[in-house]
Structures are given as C-alpha cells and as structure tokens.
Length: 393
Image 1 (cartoon, rainbow, N blue to C red):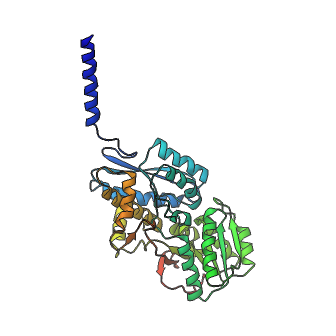
Image 2: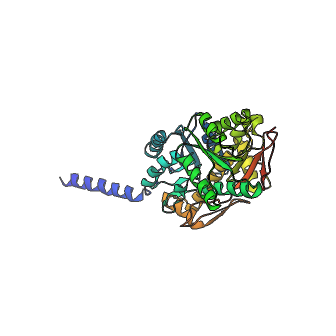
Image 3: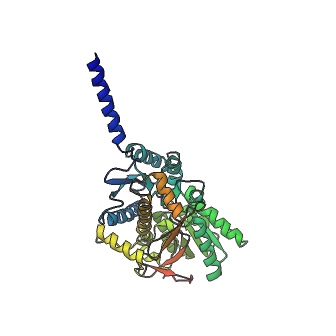
C-alpha cells in the first residue's frame, strides 16, 4: 500500500514540476515560430478589387518582414476569408477567424456595413481590429479600445470635396450619388456637415443598392436638377456605370468620388470616360518613390508580384501591415493583444520614412490628411493641389 502511495506521490510531484516548467499559455494566434492575423474582406464579386488589394498590400508588408527574419523571431502570417461585402457573411467569416482559426488580431476589413457587423464581435472578444478600409465615424470612437484606424475619416474627405469645389471652382450647385447603406449614409452625413458649414443646400440625392450597378434612376433624379458637380460615395463598378451613362447623356458635371471607390479599379472601368474625374485619397500618391516608405512599398509589391502596379488600395494595405509589424515588435517576445494595442497608443508616433502616424488614448486614427487626385487623358491618376475644370472630350 505504502509503495502505491509513494508511486502516486512521485507521479504527482513530477506533474507539478512539468507544469511549473511549462511556459504560460500563449495568446491566440501566437505560436513558437508564427503569429497569425485574420482578414474578413470582400474577395469575390463586383467589389473584389478592394479586398484583394488590401490583402496584397498586407501580404507584401508581412513577406517583406518575414524575409528579414520576421518579428521577434516569428514569421507573420495572414489568413483571409471572403465576406462578399455583405454584413451577414462578414459575421460568419469573422467568427470563423476568431473561433476556428484563432487569429491574434483582425486586420484589413473592407467596408462600412461589414465593419459595423464585424467590429462588435472583435470588441467583445477583446481582439484588435486594425486598419479597416473605411472612413466611417463610428470606428473613430476612442472608447473602442481595440480599434485602430490608419486612414482619415469620411468626414475629412467630404469636407475636402466641398472646400475644393467651392473655393477652387466656385461651385455651389452640388448633388450626391451614394450607396444606400451604412457606407453611403456615412458619406452623406459628412457631405451634409460640409455643406451646412457653408450654408449650402444639397441640390439632389440619388442612390443605388449595394452590390448592384442599378444606377439609372439615381442618374435621372440628379440630372433633372442640373448640378455643376456630383459627389459620389460608391464602389467602383456602380460609380463607373453612373459616369459612363452620364457621358452618353451629355451630362458632364465635375465628378468627385470618395477614396473607398478604389481609384485604379475605377479608372480601369471608366477607360476614356474617366478623364477629369476627381478622387479624394487618404494615403500618399503610390507612384511617388521620393517618399521612403512608398519606395519600400513599391519594392515589396514587386517582390510578391513582378507585374504589380502602384495602387492606392494596396498602399493602404501595406501601411496597415507596417503599423501592425511595428506594434508587434514593440509588444516584445511574448506579445499579447493588450500589449499590442498599448504599443500603438502608448508610442504616440510611428515614423515610416516620410510618413508618420500618430495615436493617443483619445485618438485611434493614424493618418488625418486628405489628398486630391484626378484621372488624366491617359487614364492614369495625377495628384492635384487645386481643382480645375477639365473637358471630358
């Protein structure tokens, strides 16, 4: 009997020693040699270029770091799931990433309605929600401790639209075309604020349904009021359809679109009809290699795809990736989600070579600047400091 007790005691003692010697359980998504981020975004359908662009930019940043040994000895991995730019699918994709894939953080979500569906899940799970491709105001609420934004808000973009249209071109008759959902209404809200600030009335409003190109009714509604400018809060295919139909109808106001449209995809859809179309941007010009981080982005993109061309969406994805990598490095050899978020807000300023992002406990938005660009006669974008009237012919 005593020998059995002694054997049991010895086994229990050995088990205790093993437990004491074992490291503390790592955070979800953190393995001995890898750390995994999850992306729920649109990868198929009429808005796919946006999710695929963010994915490519993130992948370029992560691969660039991995070739140098990763972060704190770990390679960084991206797991992407398609949400089709639909809120219900975004919930399902986000749950899979959190509960099945057990990612460390969510990064590179695309869209306002989808982010509105996914962010509460991330917040409830205390999982970082980083670099969403949307300027929606609700994500700028500093009380959302797990949310980190890279880009400027839609309010900042719409203010820039109205300022340039009224000051540069002296235009006051402005209509709006927008997607009839949370995204479009976020843009509409910012536009109304900018117009109210100047005691101007919105001349007309036209809407379309998400994931469609059914824009004819909106066009008829807006064209009837004869605006001098039409501002646009949509995705690239319906926005392009609206402009192409307008050109056919000899309706040629100044067209100004929001950054979410996907500038390069829009220009491709428009072809010759794109000349003179203005798009506000929230990242520097992706062809400007004089900015160190942009030159690094260009090289990183070529490393994963030698046919890659500079693009505003992929640059935004790359910058979100660079921020995540910098925060991981500051979080140390045993990163936690809490430590990752503290690294961002506690650092205050991140300098990425000619481009700085600043954060604080009360500010979860890294970049605040809005840049104006225009499609030239060759179908390529050029940066503009002041709007000028350009003939569509």
